[in-house]
Amino acid sequence: MLTKPGMTEAQQESPHPTAPTGRPPGRPKWWQRPWIAPLAFVSVLFVALSLPPYLSLEPEQSRVPQPDDFAAHYPLLVVHVVFGAVALLTTLPQVWPWFRRRYPVAHRHIGRVYVFGGVLPAGLTALPLGAFSPFGPLAQVSTVLMALLWLLFTVTGYRRARRRQYIEHRQWMLRSFALTASIITNRFWGVVGFLVLSPQLDTTFEGSEKMLTWTVAGLSTWLGWVVPLLITEWWLNRGEAARRGARLPTSVARSASGAA
Image (tube, rainbow, N blue to C red; front, side, top):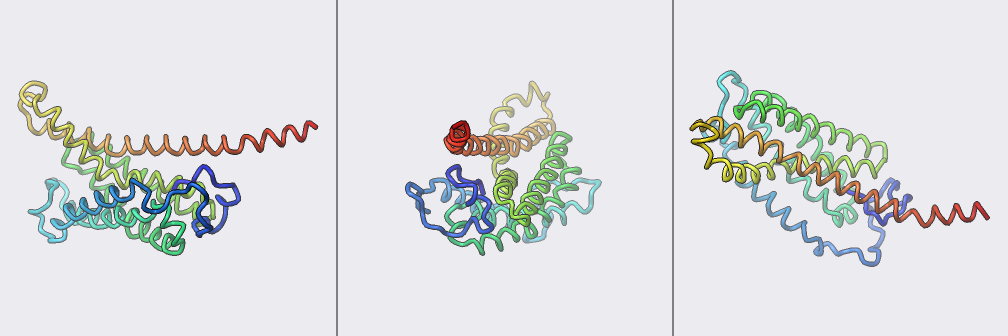
């Protein structure tokens, strides 16, 4: 979804930027993208392990405790998990540069599934689920804010594509992907938080497992989406700096020619 620094402005603004135009010298082949296979493996494995308990429609198998004051929690959670899985799986071909260039029509169709069959229903259900999260106020604020940003980034990216503003489309959808993948990264931070903080159960948390759980959940929820989003912004700024650098000789040449 991120525009390559070496692309010309005409290519970037083309109504069909993903159409195959031949591989420029030095562009990696599809199998030379070292992050594609690990990303696909982790995403598919995560869905395979997380989704089945909710397909049974049995609340006893839920991995999230049911709040006492929110009867609709479990049905909304099932909807959120199912459509969140759709968002995670459909984003894989979308971030694969080779697939986008080779199959532009499929890229557009899968993108619509990602938006309307993934992020929108998953993000909208995340709002009440976050507000009534059983993991404490820190996790509640984080989940609601992340859901709002997730919806905002995705809708903005979709609207940019409809307006044929493909550079901005890729940038906003890359931000959306960072938040989509946060469901995986916050599990990592949860394990780290538990390993670091659990030895302090009898001291810092005065023996309260509830407070330990709330703290770990709050930290992992925030770190799960803030860190990927910061990395994404760094990547986007890096690409923008590279594009400015690539355009510099032309600007200098024009200035020199105007002075002459």
